[in-house]
Image 1 (cartoon, rainbow, N blue to C red):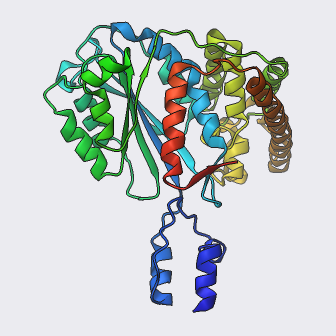
Image 2 (spheres, rainbow, N blue to C red):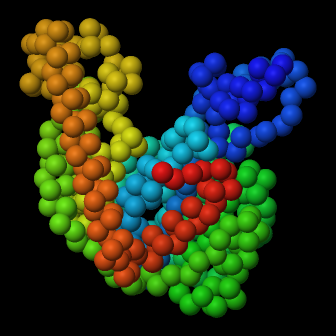
Image 3 (cartoon, one colour):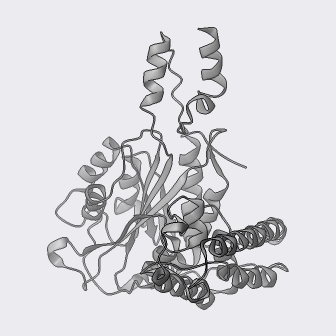
Length: 389
């Protein structure tokens, strides 16, 4: 019995069972070995951070959308360093909704799921850059409720589940009372954070703060039209060049391979349109564990056991591998994997120096939206025993 308690306290049986544990490790006193074994068997295999972004795309929100485009990669990069307690690193999934736009269906409450929970960062970026603004009715309670119903939030109490809703009209608009939506969110252990685009006191008077506090979330007010100030560093040019080399390590395959490879390059171009610093931040994300493309890239697919090289058909291969033997294909994949890992390591090392440089020269580098998101994320993650290294 002492042996089992010792393992429970130090490793929570992670090694013994091969099971990944959550951050909020419930340290209940167990009465017997059988109970401990039963508890372990019901632990989920993965730990998730699930974030739903609900963005107002009415006429006045162009600045908000631009900030979101510029700062998506900051959110991704922040969680690269997150750990569940002292154990595993969580998987990150982000969903995106738009609301308050006349181009959307009135029957749906002027609400649209742009993309459900996904770890496909290129697709998420593409969807974010596709957003346009137009006048409309902004139903905060209804868009929260819609995201609760449509998204697969899971039932693991150790997952970190957050909604961020941003807009500038009264939180009370629409038939569905925001209090009911907040109550439903709380029942699902989902924290609603509200970001009012305007004056802090006005956001309070129009119930944006109330919408957050009902679930234990945070209320924030931002100047959504404020230009994001980026700090350029001596390491940026090298990271951008490494990013181009990184793209060359991807081996497209299958029906969607060529299309997804183009999408990868297009999202690099979208980042270029924002600012050089955004390209750098995206490159850092691409060098992280979150940037996985096993659905179209042979290096990731083989590493994740998604593809058996011996079963690949010639028509599914890129031109450089057509007609090659199984051995030649494996050797090519291995060489690209080695090259990729070396480039990613270089980017990470340069980014550490970049972060030090920014910290020394920082005045207001972070954007308004980024400050709001990362502040709330850090505070709420700490309650689930997340740590940053």
